[in-house]
Image 1 (tube, rainbow, N blue to C red):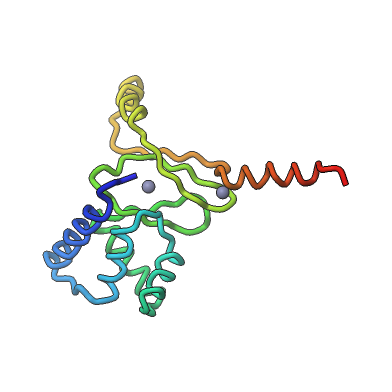
Image 2: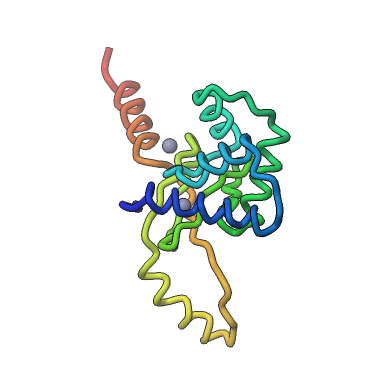
Length: 163
Ligand SMILES: [Zn+2]
Ligand SMILES: [Zn+2]
């Protein structure tokens, strides 16, 4: 979705480090590792996903530290927390070009992004019609992803096959 993802991820990481410095907050190693994972990710990571990445990098960092670091990242405005109704939150870096909607699969939890350009043009008009001042919005579509739909279709085909 974002061709400049890694460059802009690294830029976000630099901005986060300066943000910590300005506030005289310690740039601890675990906090920096968590920030690097979330800010350069192309996915919408859950806490589980973040912990898995940390383990792959050979770091064992407790959940409390992960949650605290995520709170700090969200507070910095460089990361957004999403609640897609799965019972846990997912975290996403806020790139400059981050205006997009989400397709959320209710079965496997896959999150796909799509451009909301068409909505962006329409939303000020809708707001205007209601005398409403628009601050922000989010577009979320819940349903079944292609993989889960295909699995359903082949299951039906198998069940319908004569013995
Ligand atoms: Zn799915
Ligand atoms: Zn997203």
